Structures are given as C-alpha cells and as structure tokens.
Amino acid sequence: MPLHEDAPSFAAALPTHGSLLALDAGRRRLGLAGTDLERRLVTPLFTISRGRWPDDLAKIRRVVEERTVVGLVLGWPLNMDGSEGPACAAVRQLALQLEAAFGLPLLLQDERLTTFAVEQAIAEGRLPPPKKGQPLDHYAAAVILEDALRALRAPARA
Image (cartoon, rainbow, N blue to C red):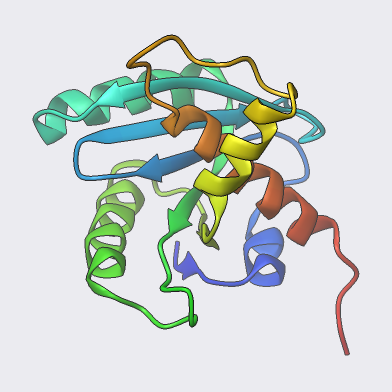
C-alpha cells in the first residue's frame, strides 16, 4: 500500500467499514487515537513512551487488532510555511515501518497547530485538564484524526 498525502487517494484505498488509528509521533512519545467502526467518533486512547521499536510495534499491533483498524493516519509535521523539515524525514521513516508492519493504507495528515488546538480545548473545558506531567500526545492524535475525518468527508474539488 502506498503512503497517501491527500484524503481522496486515502479514502479510495479504504474499505467502507472499519476503524482508523491516528498516531502523533515524537522522538520520545507516540500518542494514539482511534475511531469507531463507522468512523463517526474519535477517541483519544493513550500515549506510549517510546522504547525499542519491536516493543512499540507490539503495542500498536495490539490496538490495530483490538479495534479492527483498516487505515492509519500519521501526523505530518510540516513547517508553518508548508515545507518539509527534518521532522518530516523521521515521520516518513516511521510511516514506512508502519506500512511494512501492517500493510494498511496510511495517510500523512498535516498536524500544524494541533498542540495549540489541544491547549485551547482544555482551556475551554472541551477536554479534561491533564494531571501534572501527563502527556497530551493522545489528545493531539485525536485532533489529527478529526482533521483527517473532515478531509475524508469533504466533497471532491474539481
């Protein structure tokens, strides 16, 4: 399965039923969020402290199997001007590893301003405030996944 950088090609590669799993990837943590089988609701799941790749992969695999995941959405850390920086190279490498491990369609979803969106949602009371020291990566993954779902539902442009 190829990596997708646009929602229409990703949508065309997906079956009509099954959940999506989003990952917000950082050097130290992976935030995970998932949808229900009909892809209507997004749920922040948890944050993994990254360790050895085989251990991280086993945790992701468990979620993929338990949630009947049919597609992956990976936060794509573009620079504010839309250009790709060094962080994109690391995420592309992760995307290739995930593709090799699961063979599922994978969307690289623009993640600019997701941290700001999470902080704003907490400030407005739409998300519970985290306990001191608790990571927010799974909330960021949820924002990434919500953005991807919006893009998947958007009418095709001519």
